[in-house]
Image (tube, rainbow, N blue to C red; front, side, top):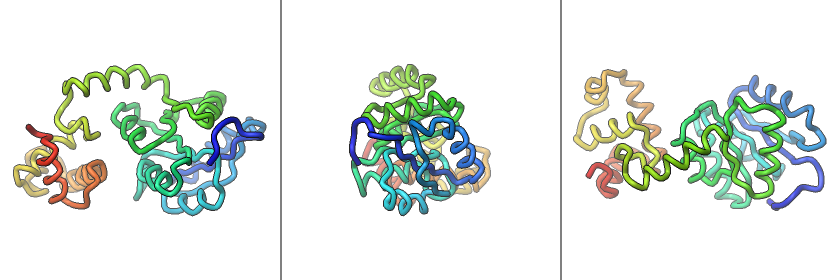
Length: 223
């Protein structure tokens, strides 16, 4: 992937797990054909890897939350294959923790889905020049949150990207509670606990409960 200003329209690959969203994005970008051109699309992260490899677009515009592998997972995978690839993530989540995870994954930007077409194109053009683009609604809060994280003013696990509830689940795992025990303690369903566990494993880069507990102890998350 090359940096700098493209000689023609930016070549974009769209990734989402909903066909309707892909069609909506294409319609949004259509009036700006002189500046951006959708050269490919993929439904889900698995299909996206092959599409991106075959097209080498200027930017991959991808949803954060998808069934199966997430946009964060896809970003990491694409950058492992090509460190120069630029991935801009789109999300409905106005949450600094998702932003920090995106930046750690190597994303070139994190934008909210409420963005308008003109602004989206402008942000994609900035990302292509090497600027990390962040939705203005998040930028100011992110600076404050980053400073507070350095001062350990957040819950245990925040530094690793865990939400408050995920940190609660992990702490109960460390004490030895089963999934059912955690569900009972937090008054949630077993399926909710399993969903939190999948997210915890991904964020801590481990494969199972044993790995998560070992990481929590090794990193001193609950000191």
